[in-house]
Image (cartoon, rainbow, N blue to C red; front, side, top):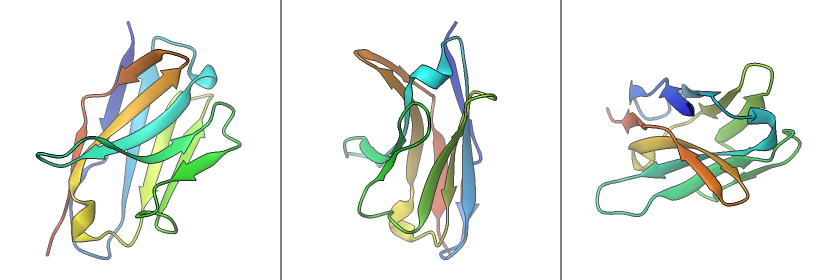
Length: 116
């Protein structure tokens, strides 16, 4: 059974940091591109960061470049999103996504709220 379980969300003040984790099971993690998306009410889910299978290449949305870092541990089947210098506009539900060819798996999401 495929599972993607996110954790690490919460409430943080502007300028603060959070580290999201996504623990994967039920598929060959190392073969999959792992992504973090986020979504706010009434908006489409948007790609925040991606790490290609093997972990050698990463991509970021312009809005988070220089503040967020995606990483993966293939041995643990886990992908991380380190978020620094958080801003109120980063408030969203963050989703973990695993993609291989036409196969897509999604986690249940974790809420991140940036507010003073």
